[in-house]
Image (cartoon, rainbow, N blue to C red):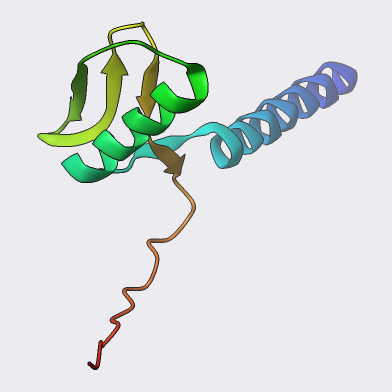
Length: 96
């Protein structure tokens, strides 16, 4: 009986460790893009992949643009790991 208990506890710990590693490495959240950023990323895709497409479609999540889909079938969705904090806002003052 003691041997079965040890196997059960070891299995539960192994599952917990595996889930924790998956969560911290794979769990991601969508990052919104502006229309200008999405259009620029599409143009970069066209340039580097020699794509002849004329249009692209927005990929939306919760009412915000998170990526694009090209006519050629290429799809880009911007995500980041959940554990990363939001970057601090930096304000740059221009003096002319």
